[in-house]
Length: 492
Image (spheres, helix red, strand yellow):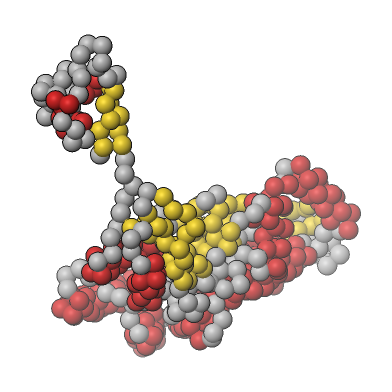
């Protein structure tokens, strides 16, 4: 074995430490008093878990029955309870475990048995209790699915690692184990502690930052006047900075030499230049968009003629949810280099219009007044700026076109607003006696087609009935072979 600057053995020392811990664990688990305590420990864990689940299952059934009486049978599961109720739910299993562990500890002590593991089990339950309280308070305002995801990916693995470290601390010298090198990287020994920080440490740091980001965004949205998009865009920059800081710290724990760092940096630069150019471009584009506040989560944009809401702005791409509830993933570089339309850039007011055709015999001022009254009567149409009804500068077919301009603060509802305004105009015109006209259309049929028209009669001549002649008396026409028309016009 080769000596290292910190006085530890060479690379094999880490494996030797693992072997020693494994041997000690086998010997330790083979003791009868340890087996007895492990059985009691497993029984306590099982009983506390099962009893807690059963009690809260009954409570949820009672809550579901009460909500169904209040809201109807459409409710499939009870909603999230209040914070005190959720705290009671989260701490029920640890509290029950502490109580059972104390009872088992007293019983084994009176019987003269060894109780070292049960003492440690109580400490584990206390740690779990504190963690459950903190996690429940942090995720109280988050959506249920997001809170469960953080529990599954962050809290539970973290608790298992804490328990494992507590067990290892009793089986071996944990400080010496973390300083033991396990392998060499470019001539630099990598210790177990450094490897743990550079892998699992960065993983938990990233999840912790994401959890705090969600908690702060939810708090800002509920208790401040800032918009969700502004808060999320600002916190996203802070989140990326903290994640980058954690990665730098984790890599620094590897204690790589300057030559190794230079070699890795050079290799990464070549890889980024050739293989990750698009990824780096999207990352830089997303960062610039966040700094300039050109695009934020919650903005309503139109890309390639399709309107949608920006759901998420990540390192590589932006997720836009369309009006059809479809998620469109767009690279950040597309927003940075191409043009797009934003309906909520500086404010959320947008103008839309509806075109109405009326007979030219109607009084234009009366029509404009009715259109204005219809617009201001809709609750989603803004009164400031005021709706305006204009007369178009084109006339034809006894028709006058009117264009009604309106403003709304809900860009996504513009298609529905157009439909509502058209229906309301139709009703108002009918009640006020305003005549809606449609352009006349004249169809020309040749003689062959005219013979197949519905209601065709041969009285007016070969191939034409009197209805196809627009009211002209067929007897006034010359239907000789030399004077038969090639076509007949029929107004529709």
